[in-house]
Length: 630
Image (cartoon, rainbow, N blue to C red; front, side, top):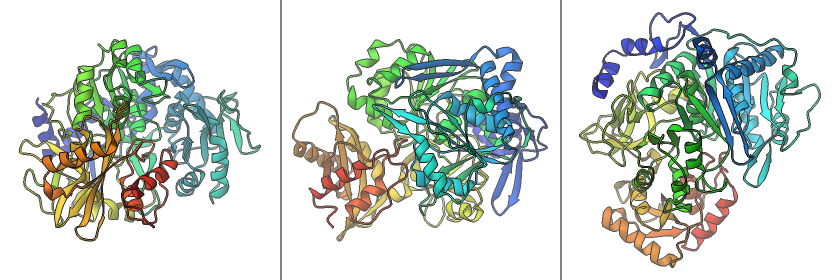
């Protein structure tokens, strides 16, 4: 069957499509049906089935005789540590940790916060919670104490699993003082904290509350898998909310299992036993779906990488890992590839490694500009697939179904909607728009399995955030268009469509043009206040390593490029060279914060910012061209 046949079938009869996909999962009790309509545009999938995520990710592979296969490869260029854990070893380790949690009174439905670096124990913590039906909430290791406290108060964990420290290039990040500070600030107090002592730092344990990770497991019986209902939350993952309070995205157990398993072959084109690598972090949704659960449910080998795209030790670290561990499909963010390109524009590091096993590179997390895609495709000699999804959906909304039918790549598009996603472009009144017209991207309800059914203890906020703008649709918050062939183009966040003298313009389209300049390694375009036109575009550009031409020459060329490619309507007059762009730790550019600095408005320091000092640098740079005057 072709992609189109399968996609059409998923929309025409979602019940039959997803019940068939559910056959690939091991159930304690099969669901009576796939879709449950709860009324008021609220839906659940496989709600009355009984199932266990850990059993499907670990135990069933051991029972099937594949226990000796590598489940996790840990590779830490920062510490020099490497480790391979087989499925049978993983089963033993996870059952033991789950037993330690159970011994501390953690049972089905209890919440557990996980505050860990990129080490195998982070995945073991997630799976141990799933084994006993506890609901985990991973908080990015090293997150500020007050942000961790907010999450503690929202999900009220019975236990916290943490490490003594994280390790970044050139520094140790002290997790335990941050954890202690967060618990002190929080109204809710966890009963117990299990602390993994890393050799880089031994943390001080608080008697009566803190236990050593390994000591807590001694003499405790390993835990068996506990079957949970299909609609039981597997985890809560907090995503930043526009109002400042984070939103707790709920991931239901059964839909998550069915959808992720389906994606591993059909989107990422890997077979059980193949090595799959998502270079992300367990604190983000990619880490949940494609470092931990997806690959393990499907019987792949997953890589836990504690490093950076550059500087650990060089711009060849990705290529080394792919070569050394025979990675078949590689998934990372465009910002990571841009960092490699900026450091090694000619791709000399790639020549040191045999990448003949690599079949494709997948990019997601932000818009992938054509220049980055073309550079990576030329360098690697494999298809580069952009694909688009969100924390809320947990898996691809639009992508290239390479394992089903590799569709022609149109650079600038994440290709087509995946099964179950009825993606439409709507105007402000909620009416469908014609092909090629820019509008709000929405998905007709119901969303497919594995997507969020609600927010943790915040149903009204869920409806307000996602359902109320376009009744009968899920509002993605992104703007874009669909062409005559059904290919989707993500042009910007809805907030990033700027209005210049009545013309709605996409900052993303301008960024594509700027990124095509040979000296520009990375860029961002934002809409700043303009008394005459309402808003005007401002470009920030970072230069490729080694470029030492006068900045004024380069910015003049950038302005001319936009005028030539997009036209005078863009009213693009200002470009500014900066050393680096302000980003979250997952690589998203903090455009809204740049706008507030430029417009001299107050702003809240983003919790996810990679390096707060950069905002002062940006302010100083903006002041040189007349912005950020206070």
